[in-house]
Length: 89
Length: 489
Image (cartoon, rainbow over all chains, first blue to last red; front, side, top):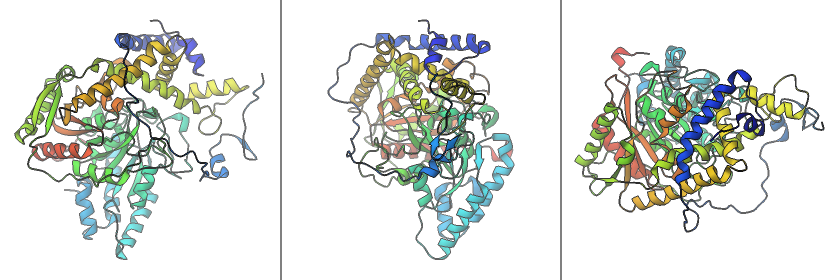
């Protein structure tokens, strides 16, 4: 199984520099080799969910953290909004 | 014995009887950090001022006769993926190098409400991805037993700090063994609780269906105390279970009559280190001598556990780490001309190699054409394992294996070979995939004086059974400590 590292990187919003490309390709091939055994997993039918998650009540919660506190972590902000480079290309 | 080498319950007793003050204890720990930290690199952030202020506050409350928690005044460390309001939380990544959370994790908040003294934030593998704490942006954490060896990971800073006396106890996180494996490497006790018992609110997510916060302590009793104070339902965490919990105890019990221990021989025979196998078998014999009945078992589908874990955890990680894009918090790359460049440059510069590998793998196994082949198979395998382990627990009470196939390895030995590193988790991932609790307790030393750990796994909510059996092993083996007369650090 050959993993197209550059294509996967693009999907992941990552770039792999040329000098590391070969190393990453080898790593990913080795990992893919380790995962091959999963092809032996057959169909398995189980009754209901094996690990059930309890659903909470569908109620609106108020955020306990103020907008100013949240904005303090922003790399760039303007009047309570996050600033980013242009999004229309 | 120095204060920093004493256990949580011993120190709590001394504090309650006013034999020592919290300030005295905190200063003992901070002085210890001054001596050892340059060699170990357990911490990312040390909050001296904050810790001393908390200690003084506890001493004041005690002088007023207030009824305080058993954790009051105890110096504790937190893995640096557990959010602490006002105190930097980096996840050992350049991406969050200067991030200061506006809120605290529920588990951290519970400790603060018990008046625990938070010494600082402990080193880890970046975003909890790793088994050696070599993937940290802030450098490697060394093993207190031998500074040429790794401390394990991803909670390596926690284990090293507890083992060396830099903190009295710590909270780490465990997604595939990240509390138990470093505990085993550093001679500490580490527990992964049943999934859903400890709130994940404020724990920076790696793999949301597998992550659990767990204590790393000097002894089983300390682990029981820590767990008792962090369990409970939390409305902020939709996976937090709404049920009551007992106060866990670890009183040494004399008899394990009737306790049934399963040895999955097709798993632990993968352990190739003869010293690890020998210490593990010694520990099993201890359990037998105290009345436990041991039988060999075979877990259907066990060979799928490690690959299934890496598919599921990477898939969830690729989704969870998508939030780190330079927009709302954290690192943002310079010289950006457009939105796509913002995302790509920020993420490429902000994440380390192991993080990138996991994100790539996660994206790949979820992508069109491969999702059924990998992700769906992994989830199917996981459900099969839940079923087959639950079947085993109809006939046994605990499943025992070595925590790791080897003792702490040399720094640099495996960091460039991810598959070899991933095999460090071969015994630990089963507990995460099934959501069941597991504990690692020291059971001896290898020929080089490095700690060996035995892992016990119980059915869901079986933490008390873990503490009972682990206490027996600990009582017979004794606390594994650094050789103080020849303290290598």
